[in-house]
Length: 159
Image (cartoon, rainbow, N blue to C red; front, top):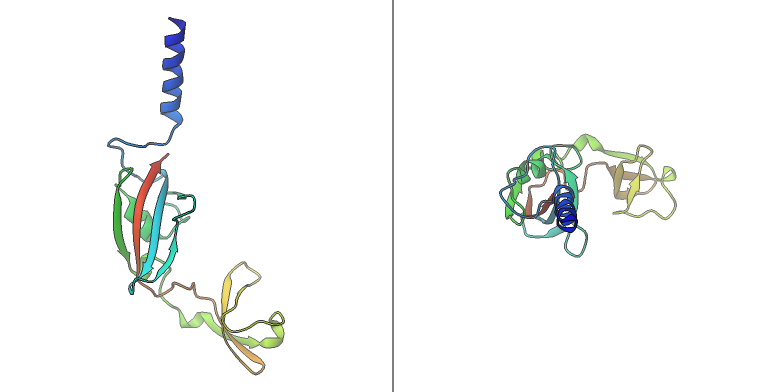
C-alpha cells in the first residue's frame, strides 16, 4: 500500500512541475513557452532559425519578444505549427532616417570597415554603412527595421 501511494505522489509531482506536452491547454498571456521558428523575409531569405539549437523560451505578453510573436502564439496548443506574417510595426518597427548619422572616423575603433557592427555606450548596435575619407555614416536602426517578416512557428511546450 505504501508503494502505490508513493508512486501516485511522484506522478502527481511530475504532472504539476513538468511542461505541458499535450491536451487542450492553449497559450495565454503570462505563460512561459518554448517555440522553434524560422524567420524569413518576403523574398524567402532566412534571417534566423532555431533549428539545431534549443527552442526559444519567453514569457508571453512581455517585451522579451517582438509584439507580433506575442500575438501569434496566443491560443496555440503544444505541437501546433503555423506561419504568420508580421508588419514592421509588429516586428522591429519602421525604418527611421533619424537614426542614420555621421561621425568622424577618428571616433571609431581602428580597422573598422563598412558593414561592421559596433556597440555604442548604451549597448545599442550600430552598423557602419559607409566610410568616406574622415567621415563615417552609421545606422542605429535594427537590421530588420522596416521589413515585413514571415515566421514559421512550432509550439514546443507551455510551462
